Image (cartoon, rainbow, N blue to C red; front, side, top):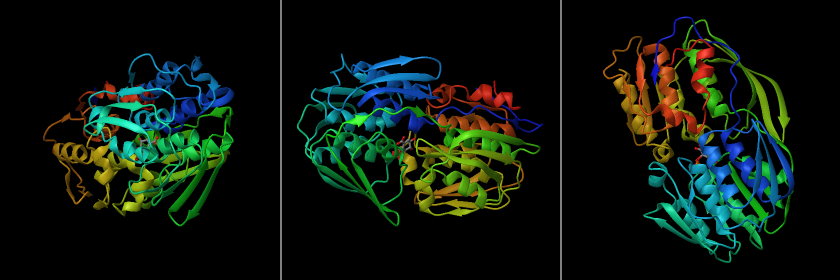
Length: 432
Ligand code: S3P
């Protein structure tokens, strides 16, 4: 895919797709509830379709129409053994959540994935589940992974790695396990699972003490189906937000965006840099915060962000780095260790591709330093993505200023935002 310079700015009201994290949960949780659940605006991207097909292969009846699905829940303990391996493509969220879910079922399962997913760490979910008596066999710590039927017991956890995927996998296992499981989180991670479980009637109690959070869940209480309207995805929005900020004569309005305080770091960071962003029509739906977002072209300053920002915006550093490259002063983003174990080593690819675009940047101890300049001399316009959708989309936005950039393996964008190119070109983008 080639992303080229734009001259007239970005303008309009793009259709941002449904939130990816909430969409995964909107398939899994209704599938193990009692009753029929209608889910609107679900994201139909490759990652979510892998979760959806996995649940179908486990015997759940899911009817699909355009961007709505209807799920007939089977209850906590009535999934069926899949006929063969369950293939999860590129999706880390599917892998970690389903490992938890399936370790508490009464049959064996095998999970597989593509090359990138098969190199990502799975021991981080297998180890705590093993403490619950789960029997999980990874391949050198990754997929393929076998889950053997086992009787789980409730346990207490003090989570050291900040990860909503690990927390959610444990919650899904605990749901079908007798007794009280207690999970202590020491850092903030996205809380979509807890929010949805509460609204489906789970016996869950949450206490917050500063950034620490203690979740108690009583297992084997059946869930009650609830309809869901999936809000639109702030992470997908961030590519449009930054392209508007760094291109002159631009203005966009994003509608119905999920503004969950455990995930809004990108907006806080951009505002700190002087971005003209207005949040309007704040409201709630299915207990998630929603708003519309107005963005106009802005002169950005650099900023220093501590590691606490990484907890609130881990997926947004690729696109934030593009914004920082067009700021008036340097930026430092600290504590980006988790970026190394995403769909790619994102810290490595941000540095490599920015440097190829002529941007002066470096990393030291997982901190990223960006020293912007007024003009850039491109050294190599082939952008290496290692099939990572967020690296591909971030450098498409870089292309609007420095193009043409040739984005390698850009099909990965389908994992989260299949309509990205069309929506972006409708606003005045130049991607082909
Ligand atoms: C996600 C959690 C995050 C995030 C990923 C989606 C989720 O991963 O990076 O894109 O839906 O729970 P970690 O939990 O590994 O930080």
